[in-house]
Image 1 (spheres, rainbow, N blue to C red):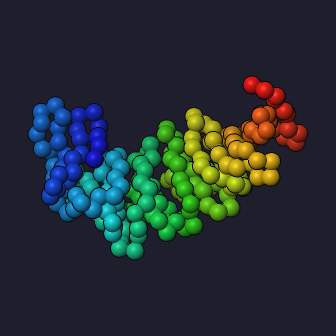
Image 2 (spheres, one colour; image 1 turned 135 degrees about the vertical axis):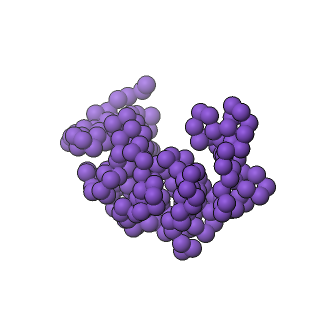
Image 3 (spheres, one colour; image 1 turned 180 degrees about the horizontal axis):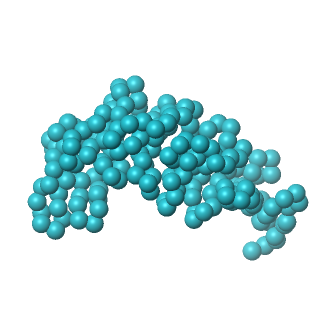
Length: 208
């Protein structure tokens, strides 16, 4: 399945999911419940989070399994925040934030996509109308923008890169958003020309 850290690897075998030491070749732990055939998503952090076909589970290597969600939750995305919180987005659009013990901190519904900041405890949350920067610990919205014709969103340092169509002018449009300052810059291409905009008037860049 993949690496837990630089010294351990998570293996899916015929009848088990287990942790092995890469240096010694020894088996360190075996998950007693997780069916290896059913593993659909997994993410490693303070514990191993695994999403099977029917449920989401949190595996603390020293203390067993905590079942987080029941059968009604379909397979979705999993990600650990830098502060050690698990974010789970199921196929119904329910976003949950969980402590490593299995306690749920908060929940939001109607979410289309998420992207966890690589170094800060914030998560990018996208629904049908807006994109928001949310504090992982509290679920509080720190900043938000209209979603527009959003197709994808990702972090690049402290900035958010928003990809989408450019509507009536054709081509692709990119928004560069700085949540801390609220600054938004636009970039799009159409008819062999590059347009940028910050504020009211667009600037046209011909050729290269």
